[in-house]
Image: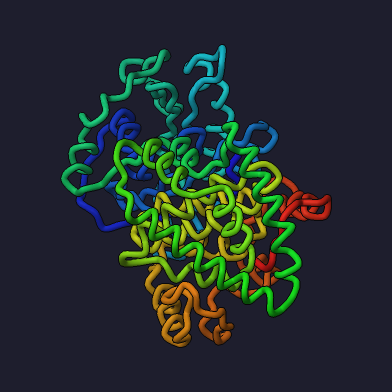
Length: 440
């Protein structure tokens, strides 16, 4: 289950009229920017014509015991979030998206999720906002939980339109809106290796950790490690940037993986566990730096294998930040959601995740980072070998205390109806997590 919901606000896009459950189901990937498999999606509707507003996505909880509290929190989140942005929804559309498991049919998926759909309808009704439609989408078919008319919504379900043939697809093509594949595919680009090469990467991380830990614990050594980390990252960005991406996403990612050795990846991954070093790396978020930086952060996230999975929070957060900064909000929410999945208490990811989900403009943070770079002439962002210098406190947007952040972001690290997942994270670190982490 994805413990962190994704919320997007309304947009002033071209007006499209959708008629019936089929066109609503076909429109979902274009509203989200990807196919949201294994997901609950709620969409707010406004006005007499049902204008689309905020959208919220959460992974479907595996245990039905969680469905009631999850439904209540999702309804509250979407309705109150819409009110903060200007207007209370007049209605809501619910989507439940899940493909069949082994031995299961799409029809049995629909029946299994029917109680969840009912809980969502009841939860929205508690806030006096009706659910106009609730759809199940599974294995290329869709069902309506609200329409009793078998003539338009038969019990065996209806087939989704062929990709690219719906009214929403035509409008999206005209507007330049792209669907980036499925959520599973997007997360797969950032997932740790499971190939035989993972053992070699784990050994390199062990070796680098043994060498870097004593230096990081020493004040002078920590600054030197920071400079070396940023210099190495710069060299890898240059190497990646000089290599064109040919073929599909999988082929491009594999090509990037071949450009970075185990030792290089280990050194940068461990160096980024230092908060100040990670914040310096966040300055590579626009212009010619953005694309190679994003490719590097994805590559490093895939190298956080085995017991080092929690170390992926830093490169995942950087990947999410660059994606958001360059206008890829769906990609940003996926990367930041994964960062919070591996470390629910990672403050930088929590702040960015909330800001992205609330539709804030990333330019405010970009401007802050630009001022930071100008304030330090020896910035490693501009000079790979330059010494690390501490930045003025007032231009560091990511150093708020975790306790204060938890008060501002009550749902960022807590699964609705469940216990605090951060306790598991702390327990892992106490039980001997290898490597070194410094700051958040």
